[in-house]
Length: 273
Image (cartoon, rainbow, N blue to C red):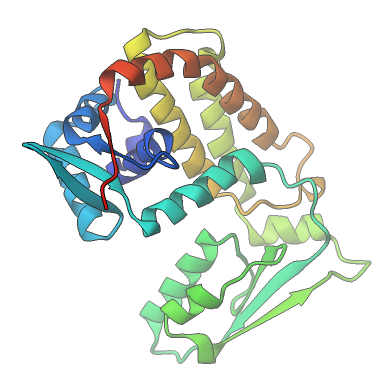
């Protein structure tokens, strides 16, 4: 089994920890992580390097028990995982309850600030914004960008407003102009194509854990790239709902076998202060 579309080891690690560690006050043995990651095509050296990098970035803590090393969550990684959990199981992929509110962000940067402009646009895209005009970006709902702007040191150059469209505004056309809908739809279609066969297929018990890990990591990557545009203004055949149903069915089918595998593959110990 290999990681679909080169899922980053850190993304897989966070997904794994969200499944096995989050909310349980436990740490996981490094050897267990290496074993599970080998089943998704990540080698031992890459797994160890990922663990070390995540410790250095404040995403993991080490805990030694005898000659063995265990890894647990930090406040930072727990917050990241809680956000991912909400995004998958509560927020979902389909925005049916949009109240008509938009967040507008305008910026004016000196011509020479090419890097700052690039960084701001990248962060805005990741946060669900699309470019309405060159210096005016828009996102559905109320999006808090204060921290994002402050991190980039651009608070003095950015203005943020909440707004509603005029009654005569063609919102569907605006969405098509501001976001790459074909690219977004293609991600959902690719996810369905890859995972729909698993709605009726069962893996070997020990492979179910690795298969579920890939499923969740890939699904989270897809929906985190989705600005959650209001579904009533998207094309009628928008594939997000179909993809979400595939995700939930496959996840439900894999879970009994995955949990059985976790019981004998994964060694956990209680967190020590």
